[in-house]
Length: 311
Image 1 (cartoon, rainbow, N blue to C red):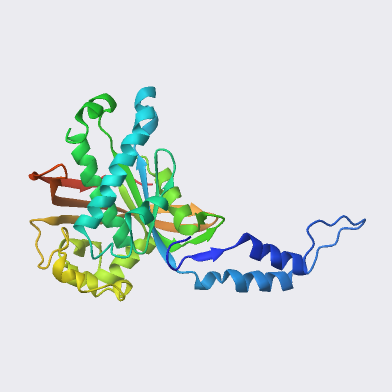
Image 2 (cartoon, rainbow, N blue to C red; image 1 turned 90 degrees about the horizontal axis):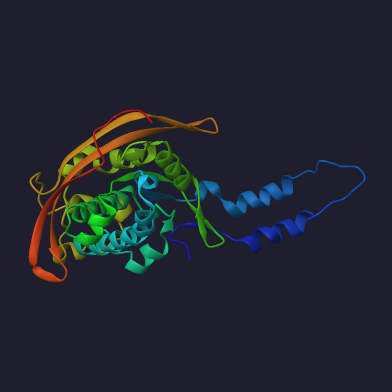
């Protein structure tokens, strides 16, 4: 089943419309262009494109995957899945309020794999960004020889590039489609660097809801709970389950300590232009060893980089 509020388009329902007012095959001596208005009206009302809600898509791609050796390429899918699962668990540990409407199984089952990365669908760009931050922390942990150090020695270090979009999504025949996925894939394909890029709609979401991406370094979890998209979230969770990044009081000593955003260009698709922004965050977090809770390390990582070369 699709995520909440994602339009479900069914094969049998469309076929029902076609069977009612169209012909599957027509072989006539004279070809005649038909009047399609009756079918067009049926399909327009059924799809209801203007009523389809927006979702955020997070694209994660292994930077220069093809440059790894054959053995390493065979092992990387295992490593990616390991990091992915650790990130999912970390999101529920660090951000119980934000991810209260998700389950670990829900996120994993709806992950769209591309072999060397994939796409995740979330309710807001903030969910996508928080997941990306936690993924980057786990990735740094791996690169620093704290996760399967012998495997790290064999595969080598890895770098990721990220893209976040905010647009329409629909569900058909057990798959997700829509502009949010298309735009996310296009941004990743255009980026030749290991950056974190967001589209203009995600940028507008942050501007509308938190007065801009730069405010990520000072907003609190209480500020986030007042965002319209979180209006039906359980606020009682704020009392017993603190957020690891967005704390009760604003500070730049822990959590997001720096946030930079810069427009770097546009991508063009079928005569449609989409502005793209380069996002760079520095995040400080504590990580606890699941196998030995007495072991705690502090990591400061960068999500994306400051390279503003065009796209």
